[in-house]
Length: 486
Image 1 (cartoon, one colour):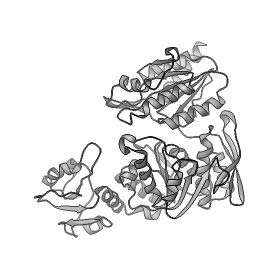
Image 2 (tube, one colour):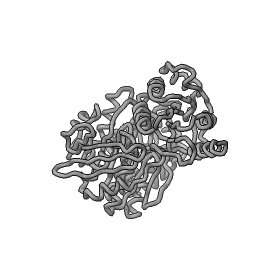
Image 3 (cartoon, one colour):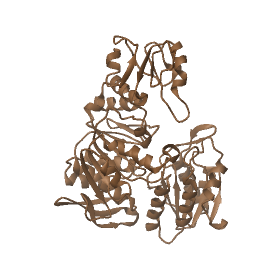
Image 4 (cartoon, helix red, strand yellow):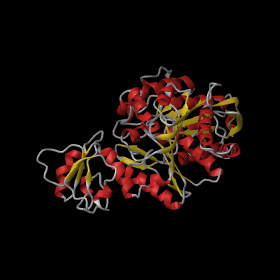
C-alpha cells in the first residue's frame, strides 16, 4: 500500500517519508518491524514505544511517533496521537471495513457480554446476519473463534470487521471496554447504535477516579448515531448529556422513561417476565436467564432493537428463545443433591447482583460462595468484595483467581480485611481446584454453591504464566464424585 493511502485519516504533523513509499503492515513491536513494516510507538501503562525508536530505525523501519527526539536521523512520521493513528492505519490496511457494517457498541462495568448476546439473538431472529466480538468469544459468519480480551487490539479488531464483511454479515456487535475508548481503538468508527449499561467502581488502577472512568465511557456516545442509556444508573444522566445524535433512556425502576417495564416478576430459577412499554406499545418479555439484573439487561437489548426498528414479535422471540450465556449465571448440569452456578462476576456490583439473584431462588439451603480477586488489578475492590461476600453468603471459600505476578495469600489477606465473619463461616484454600472440591464435597443437601470470578474462562494465570483450567469440567468431576458417594 502506498504511504499516502497507508496514513489516510492520520493527524500528521510532520514526516520525511515519500508518499509513494510502499508498506505492507504495521508493528507495535520493534522486534517485528522492517523496511516495509513501520514501527508505531505506543505509550502503555508499563512501557513506552518511543524508547525503542532507535532500535526500530536500525532495522530499517520507518517510525510513527508522537514525540520526535532531537537528532533522530531515520524515516519518521510525527502525529498528534499514535493510539489514534494505530486504529486508523489498521482500518486502512483492512480496507476500511467499518464503513461497510452497521456497528453496535455496548459499554458499562457489568452486563456488556449479556446485552451483546441478547441483541445478537434478537437481530438474528429478525433475519439479520450478525458478527460479534467480546469477552466470551468472537463470532464471524456464524463461526465462533476464541477471544483474548474484551475489545481486541486494532490489528485484530479491523481484521475481524473485514472478515465479517467477507462473510456477509450486516451487523458487527462489540463489547467496548473503557481501556479501548481511552486508547482510541475505535477512532475511525461511527457507531450505528451504542448502549450504556452501568458504571460501578472498577479499573480504578487505570482510570484513578470514577470521573475519569465515566469520561472514558462517554467517548463512545459522541461517536454514535443512536444512544441507549440506563436512566437508573447514577452516571446515566452524565452519559445522556454527553451523547450526540438520537438518544433514549431505558429504566427498569421508573415508569416515566423512553423504554420501561411493567408487571415484572421473577420465575425463580426459570427466569423473568414483564411487559416492555414504549411509545404506544407493549412487548411481553420472557427470559430464561434468572436474576434481577436480567430485567435491566433484557430491557437494554430490547430497547436497542426497537430503536433499530426491529419488530415487537422478533424482539420477544429473540429473548425468549435465548438459552443463556456461557459463564453467566450458568447452572452446571448435574443430578447431585446441590445446585452449582458459575458466573464471571469479578466486581463488587456484579458479585452483589449475583448473590442477590441466587438468594431469590436458592430455597432453604445455604449459599456457599467460592471466589477470589485477580492479581495486578484494582486492589481497592478486594475488601469491598469481602464485605459483600459475608453479607450474602452463608459460607465463603476464599481462593485464587488469576493471581498473575502477585502472591495469592497477599490478595486473600486484602479480601479478608473487609470481612468480620466468624472463622467457622469461612475458610481459605489457595489452590482453586482444591477449593472447588472442598465446597462441593462439604456442601449439605439442598445447598447452592456459587463459583464467581472466572465464568467462561478455561485458563488460570499465575506467576508462572497461563495454563489450562477448565473450571466447569472440574466442577462436574466433583459433582460426579459427590453423587457416587451417596
